[in-house]
Amino acid sequence: MPPRIPIATCLRAQSTPPSTATRSFSSTPCSQASTVTQRRKHRDPYAIAQARAKKAANLSRQEVLKKERASSLGDPVRGLTTPFVRSFDTALPPEPSADTPSTQVRSSKSPSEDAIGPKTETDNHLNFYLTKEELARGLGKSQWLTTPAAQDEPEEAEGKKARRDGGKESRGLDAEISGILGGARDADANNPDWERAAETMKDFTTGMSPAARKKILEEEHATAQEALRRISSLALGSSKDRLRVNKQRCIDVFGRHNTEQTLPPKPTSAGVTGGEQQKVERVGADTGSSEVQIAILTAKIRAVADFLETRGTMDKVNKRNLRLLVHRRAKLLKYLRRKERGGPRWQNLVETLGLTDGTWKGEITL
Image (tube, rainbow, N blue to C red):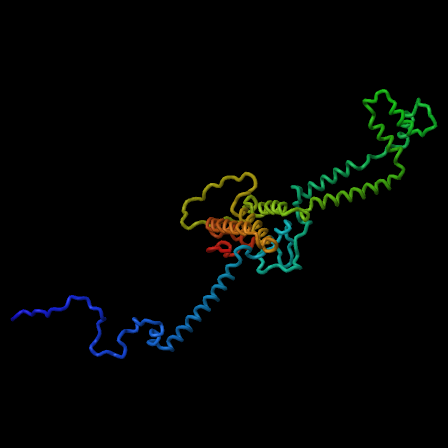
């Protein structure tokens, strides 16, 4: 059988696309159309309308979901306003009420203007590093120093005056004035008798009854007490003074030297089979744990945010400071949640400060 020899073909590249012998009304496929209008001719208008409707529904649903996620996460700067956070404005502890029986209960909405605020009677912190006990002790000592001693008996007073005036002739002057002049002429002028001179001047200048003198002293002490109370009040202090007191309050509330006695321990890890590690005995107050740092950062963030909303709308430096504080707090919150495994210490911190998931979860943009 003779071999089949193929017909020689041209090795030159073809410039036209392959096509069938019988061509339709269009010489090129729709995918190679030159304009958008030509490509749309080969699509069903009903399919185009249906695709547009699906796209619009998808976009609207995405907007709704975005708003729901943002509302569920909460404000990354402020979170939820609780009585403890609201007390940062005055550096005074909040007053429990029927709606908020405890300061560690989260408030689901912002407080109203007529809400029960902090009271100065329940605060032990004053300005200038003072406490109410120290102020009361100082006022008591000053009252004791300014109150005159009890008067001597009449017989003893007359005897002292007779001995003091004895041997001296009268020159037509009063006895008290003569005594003062006689003391001035004393040879030992370098060592005057101050006690004798004070007693003499008191007898000479005092012309009121003991009851009236006592009433005047009480009024003067009340005036001094009110003046010291106003001077030491935090209401007249600066923001720096309030921040210092807020730091001390955060240490007292969230410090582990106090919370370890009230909060249960964190849950144990499932992978740990051995015994618990020996705890080192704490020395002094807890001033650097994650809870204390987060609470102090929350106080600073609230102060900076309030300033930017009112007077610092054009302050770019404090806007950057606010962003840095928020990111630093988020980093500490992530570490504390991972370390405590969402235990009681984490729950206590979140409920007291009103921190939501938006303050630490995901990317925070301001």
